[in-house]
Amino acid sequence: MKSTVVAVAAILGGVFTSAAFAEVDHAQFVTETFKSGQEVTAKCLECHDQEAADFMKTSHWKWSEEQNIKGQKIEIGKKNVLNNFCIGVRSNEPRCTICHAGYSWKDNTYDFTKAQNVDCLSCHDTTGTYKKVFPAVQPDPKLNLTKIAQSVGPTTRKSCGSCHFYGGGGDHIKHGDLDSSLINPTPDIDVHMGGQAKMECSACHSADKHVIKGQSLLVADGKGPRIHCTDCHNEPKIHKNRFVENHIKKVSCQACHIPTIAKAMPTKVWWDWSKAGKDIKPKKDAYGMEDYAKIKGEFKWDKNFAPELLWYNGKVDRILPGDKIDPKKVVKINSPQGNRFDKDAKLMPFKVMRGKQPYDSENNTLVYVKLFGGYWKDFNWQKSIEDGMKAAGQPYSGKYGFVETSMVWPVNHMVAPKEKALRCTACHGSHGRLNWKSLGYDGDPIRKKKK
Image (tube, rainbow, N blue to C red; front, side):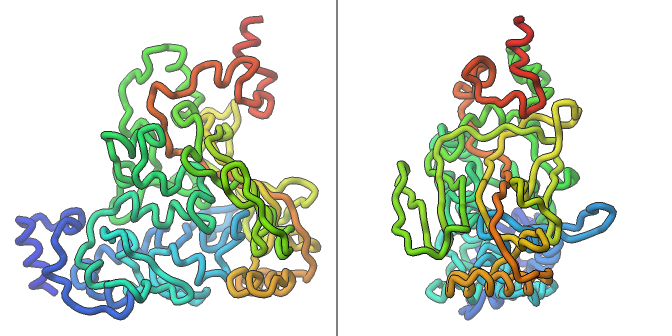
């Protein structure tokens, strides 16, 4: 190991950094034939054991973060919270964990302490061919792992997007501002990633010891390594127009500079699980998307539409496993905190996902459902809920129903060229896009001032 490290350091002129290592021609060090992902990682660990140790401390690896919730320290994150897409990871690990940067996560006995389970290739593949398959949660056996391991390098939009563009079960489903159109976008789709800029994800989502800037609203507590537009756009006065400049106090940059989302591909905005299991022939909507699937239920899609503006102070309310719900109301699985009087809150754009999903109708709690190898196989809600709740360690009364839910996803990508940013009349005036009363105003404040 030491001789290899010394050799690489010599090649780099003594600069011994992980960033520089990513630019090294690894073909001279990787010559073995690999039969599994763990064998590839074992080779990586000969030089990069510290990088693996650092990575294993991050939420990208753990899929959770410890937070203080109501006086209790609990681990929350993707691996145990509920959503209104495919509902939850618990009991569905072999399918969901295809997008985990690790190998062989098949159930809740997964060993997060084993460095050889880290999947280095999921982020550092540069061939564009790498993928894992389920239920093994291992690299596709058709791949030439030696060639891929020899070609590792810095992350790219494609390598990051191989998971982040495909959340919710496929391309352009979950995030209205993240889909495969960002692999090679036009400037109109995203001014930072398209045109001459061609910025990679890491330009903003920089990392220190594999801790990557940015937080999902699944785990956001307002204390993590956040990203702000002003990290780069930090002039004393960004806008020449003082009226526009004054908006910065209460309006996020994204609110004006991302006028629409799902620009190139439609995104899912409604998912009704209560209609699943029926032999209904799907129809195609105006965007060419099917409105029904027997294993998933009814869908609605939208394209090139305005995100919803909500107050956000960096913190989030969320439904945790076991929390009581009111089935007579729309259950907000997560919702941004803040209001117009909150000094830390600004108007921020969100994609709001709505739908119906199963819940325990006696305990009044949202439920986990075993879909992969469960409902998708036999269409038995009772059995699949029992299996899902058992895997999650949650009580189940044996009675279920369906409840309407909503979930928010922040919009930070698909920034338009500055000349296409929103104008005053987009929000103010008789045809403005804002619901002023829902934001805490009696009406449009501009129109009130004129009176």
